[in-house]
Length: 385
Image (cartoon, rainbow, N blue to C red; front, side):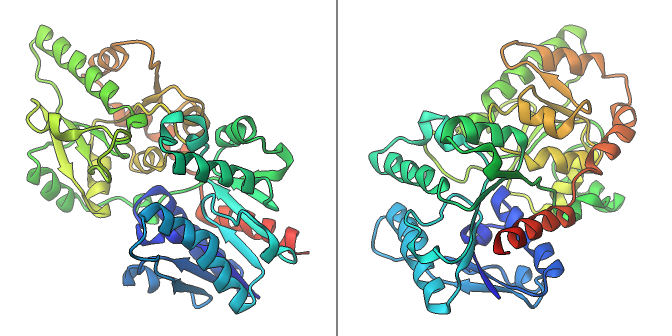
């Protein structure tokens, strides 16, 4: 049997949903040899990814319409191009890797329709629905979710939001956790780490690290304020502060994204720009601590990446971080000032990595793409039967 998959974001395999598709569906195809999965994308998938896929995991390219606004081209791809392709191929069972299932279910009346929702942020935060078209689009996607045979999400926290903000029924939602790129489960070569650190003028266990995007909800502004307070304490104590390294770059330039331009010449703040995964692993493995003060998340893969590399975690005290990291992180109350600064000062003469090592090993052991794929397979076969 063939199963169609809206895998539009696979073309960007480094963002959260791209990683989810990249690793989950590879494992799913391996353990479900009876079915062929067609990953439908609007852009070419990198060749290195295709080479990693098993034979029953195929990539199908359906380019988005040109010469029409980008938002309309995206909607056309989701609501017209994919249903037309599925109908043409006789594919009745479909999976959607984000909320993009058909607003009308007439094509799938004899098949199944499973939708993965990574978070409820677009319905929870008004700033994500700025235009009339955006409001209409997300109104329709919320309605369509209620028609899905099953909704899968990546955390209990996200499930609770979907119930609250989308009116979904608890019994129609399954929680299946993400994991990380298997690369992050192995330690980088010490020589390679040394080369990466030298490139940015850093020393092992002597800098603070952030990775995870620059949307406003990621709260970089709060992170910078905490870092400034930390530097002030260091000056008072006449000690040299650890540099703050911010990895990555803005994917978009609009009001939803923090403007990094003002940080380019900020003292002791290092902007790396885009870094490839192996270099990212080097930063995680060598930092004094990983800091992430986001206001809203559906899962937050970078926290798990950092933990796999033994990086001590300093994170915002939000439900999903508690769910993922348990007692294995320092939690920061976003309403208070100076918590990060005081914590860092209190740990300057400590081997923080050694303190956290065993707890972090226990934490990351609870996440597995293989186990997540087994849960997806069970959901699919339960609905088909």
